[in-house]
Length: 113
Length: 112
Image (cartoon, rainbow over all chains, first blue to last red; front, side):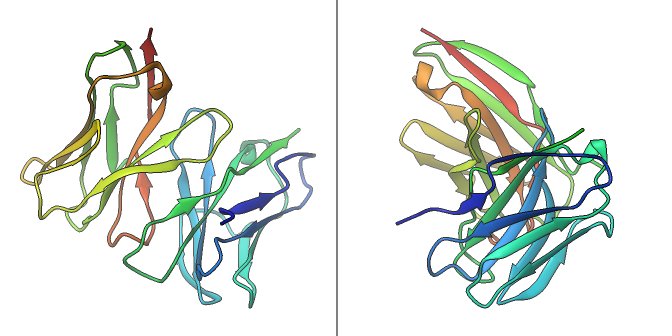
């Protein structure tokens, strides 16, 4: 079975631009979460979606938004990019809303110049 | 506010030795404590996890020890191998499928 897949794997954007990152969860998984991992740090929770509803939001500005589609895939959008948004963005999926293991994808490396 | 504190930041161990990484948490509502292993260029992979109703869990060469009263938990890697060289993250959450709060990570190097 395919794991959590993310695209693109690497991208470079200019300050002020917008970026969309995409995630396909493991087949059968209905919950998707997004994390930001700055170099040398642990992942930081951004959003969780379950059954297309936002279930949780971390301490990130409104420039960050996300959504989940009927097929349970998800997009993370970041507007007005700042240099500090440069990071590895990780998507994770799990089978149900509670009680199951979270599996991470390999991430999308975003560099803002 | 760092809710999960991890130490050491880096660790060098000889092949066959024991690697020990420690974490402390602040939020007593946390009830799920996983450890993740991350290789360069890869996403974190779940290694082992524990709930506070047990004090120890072992899976192969990996053991979690949990001290609820001290709000601490640790990862022990027995017979460490060069292939174990990676960054290890402890994490905590309320429920096993919700917002994980991660430590800052420990870079483990196992010398041959």
